[in-house]
Length: 167
Image (cartoon, rainbow, N blue to C red; front, side, top):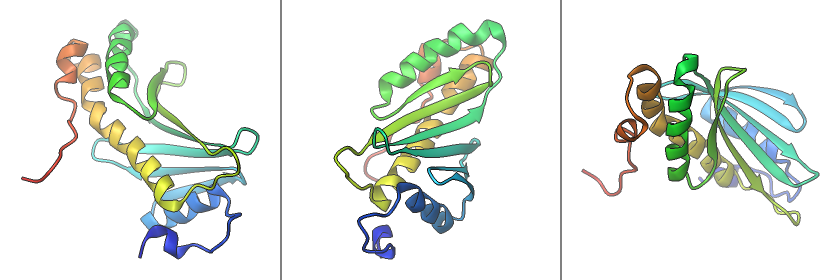
């Protein structure tokens, strides 16, 4: 059964209701912060990622923010920003930024659904999965630059490439 088959046949299903059902389906810890916002914890290989999704009816956008703590020394910020430029060149959907004041690495994406479009469960599940996959793929490169004294170019060599086919 596909994820969308387990939902009501309603055109008016709120995107955050879909996210809540997905969180229950995947057994993720979550907190429905408001009618238009949900926060959850998703366990990855490297980290536990804090993911927040918020719906804006005004501009019909489902915003995703995936964060994890990172506390690079002040003198490593330049190298971190350099590796982030390389990382973002490899991200087709979403982008990373570092929030120095909060000491958080942040992956952001906005799914625009203008004209009354509705997000489907598979689409939102893929959106969350893509955020976690991007964080997992590039986390080692960020760590090598910050703590391993590697150059951005060198650190990017360890970024896990997307595999095609099977071994």
